[in-house]
Amino acid sequence: MKSIVFAGLAATALASVEVPARGRGGEVWKRLQQKKALEADSTCETTFWDAQIDHSEGGDSEGTYKQRYFVDAKDYTEGGPIFLNIGGEGTASCPGGYVTTLAPEYGAMAVTLEHRFYGESVPNGNADTENLQYLTVENALADLSTFTTWFQESRNMTEAKVFVFGGSYPGALASWYRMAYPDSSVGSLSSSGVVNPIVDFVTFDEKVAQAAGNKCADSIRDTTAAFERTIASGNSGWDASLDQFYCEKTMSENDFYYMTADSFSMAVQYGHKTDLCAALEAVPAGADDATITQAFADFSNAYWGKDFCSMGFYDTSALADPLRWDGNSRAWRWQTCYQVAWFNTAPKSGSLRSATVDLNYHLSQCKAIFGQGMFPKVNGLWQSFGGAYPTAHNTFYSDFSDDPWSPASVTYPVSSDQPYVYATADDLGHCSDLHAPTDNDSQALKNCRTEFEGYLAAWLD
Image (cartoon, rainbow, N blue to C red; front, side, top):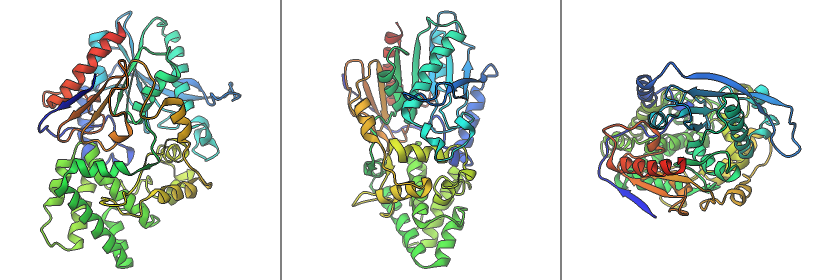
């Protein structure tokens, strides 16, 4: 059953369904928006339903919030299935990409449900620490189940089959949903699904280095070291570093190192390692620290925008203030601190990021933000869903060679109805298969989709 797809060089492509909010001021987001504009359809319906705030046993069954969802019914034919997209850790939007290219073939209705506490779907309308108790994986999965039942009944589609799609964290939810509520859907695609919640996730950094290659990885290490020397030189060096990325002065040094590490990691993750490496390797040999750091800052500001550092995603002091909540950052930090972890940390040797970005840094940040000592409740997720060995049925897992999140996924076909494809090509990153197919896609990506579509047809039949 194991299917490992290999290919040569591939054209650089956008490799995630959505860029995080902090990176939506740069070229990557602009290119994605231009592509989405070409795919846009005015028939998409945006509305809300009344979701239960607390699904836990003994919870308030009467308390509800307005949860947003999006419907694209232009390709739907009577008797067709529902393709349900799981929203993730950001503002959701109308269905698009790969799902909507599949919909015509199956006469499917494409639906996206926004995740609780993101976008406009916020229980009780705030991100106060006390209110964030309702932000759990279990509540998110229950939202999916109750919404599916309500939607089918409200549309007179109770006999319609539901197939679930998710990428990254929603990719994990796509697998977990098949276990928690197996009768609510007939199958799922878990694209880059991080089903294994790892606390001290050092393999993330190691995977970035592996994907970048030895020469580029050394350039990244040189860049990190140049920042460390600059900041250690005194206040002028620290101020200069903040100014290079338009950071707020409230940011701590360790927050800054986390930000720079996330910038180069995202470049690899989203299928842009070629551009990143070209920018870093263009720096002349023997260049001074100011030249080295500015080259990386120029790349980061161009790719992710000048708001990348200042939006509060990395700044502990900003995250600690619910009034400065940007709608997504504080919620995602709660999820990582409270339950799902995936803390990107520095390996003991060969690290690309500053050694100060370790587990203690992340846990200390959790305490500073939420005012309480926290350790992610990953044991409960492992017990419920099996970690890297899920017990779902009719779930297709896909991963990609340049994706640093892949070590948190499955690593081989788990069972006959849990197949797995690992597609290999340069600049093939996170959730690559969820984008609309193009002629420029690598053969590895085309093969991955073809194999998935065989299972999709069988599970819908």
